[in-house]
Length: 579
Image 1 (cartoon, rainbow, N blue to C red):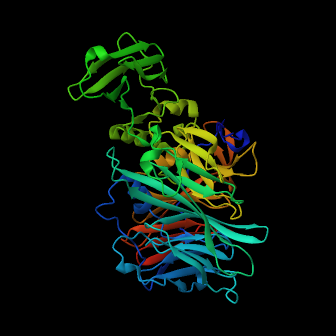
Image 2 (cartoon, rainbow, N blue to C red):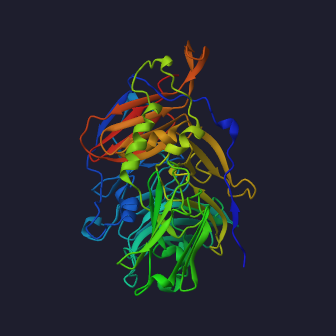
Image 3 (tube, rainbow, N blue to C red):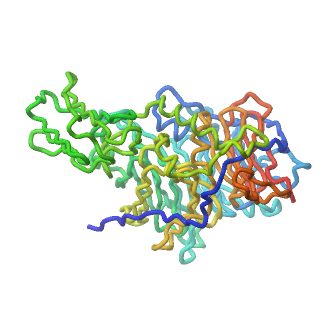
């Protein structure tokens, strides 16, 4: 049996800036243009039976604005009349109204069990479309940037079962056979699954092909399903269709189409073996025991850096602890509700543990909201609230060693996995540990989307290279201190960056948009009086407030502009004003 290769992400040190001092608030006004929509955006609210965190991740936080990365500054949305509307910007001063490019053939409002319509721009001439009812469309559009040759024509449409959203698609041409591979996401209920919520996440990889050039008919030639217990942060098919990459908290396994999910249960899809939480002084782990377990059935051995838990002669858990404990003061007790409660006393008080047992995936960490609030307070120095901060205040550069202990913004440990396109077996695994996933962005539409992870204080952008076995993931940009800055934004909804990495941007659920520009050369000479050195460049933070009380439904960044979609309006914020 082949074993997946354990890999790591290699950080490029020259792309890091250890002397970065923070973002200076800039009050320069950002030109903002507002377009009123003819009809409201086709927003689909979560139903009462869509109550889990996975439903919220997949559908409640859905980005209703779609960016056509093949054509700069071209965005699309679906309105409640069933129309796909496009706005392509050439000049901000001559903005036209969004124009209709396609109309859904069915009246989706007649369906009770539906999701939001989803669009993916597969290539410069192809689009994949879901109307939210479980029907998939392949549309040939012609060259979308050219109004003379643009014509949206359905080449394939078929009912594919329960409603889904499209999360990625690629166009493939092999031996003159054209095919389109697309990834569909569902959150489904397994009635026989009595553990947890009973919901699971399904990723269906559908390949639709035209067998020969004489036959114009496209048909499904392959359907594969991967299942897991969490919505993936990132999932994309490789440009050649030979593999799939997924970033997720819980692992995914392949399921033959039509096979019962019960036959494919594995430990990653079951309930956690234990739950744990921590304070500055100790950690508490709770293990559920079988009915009727007695004290003599349980053995817990504490060592300064290890723990072993045995139940009726069988090892439940054994491994190295993340840090040292005072093993003589650590205790355990069996509670009345058939649970084993273990208290570990930290040797290094105040040190925050990202995991209890090193490399163990069987536990689930329970966050403490008070801890998250404390770190938010300590992060405020990274974004200045003053236009000209006093350099004598002694704001030190961001130092990962100094800040690590107070970094208690926990994201469960995720992994990045590559699956083989034919066998759907895992070929490469990267344990992301505390490298929290932030967002994905299309840098080059011919390549897979890049993904941004938090590394210590910074946010690092990684570009997958499917064809390179040695360096499958390349660091292409760094957003200084943005890992910490975004953690202090409580109400953030969408997060992205420009394809040329010149700025990153995030928006809150209502009104406010924050822009973080990469350090740029100064036109005037500035000195850091404390260190007596010249400051050659400065990083700016800018804030835009939209004139609306409607919630933000969509958010997209191009090199020149930010597009923000609300129920009734489309806003353009011109980010690049200097020429």
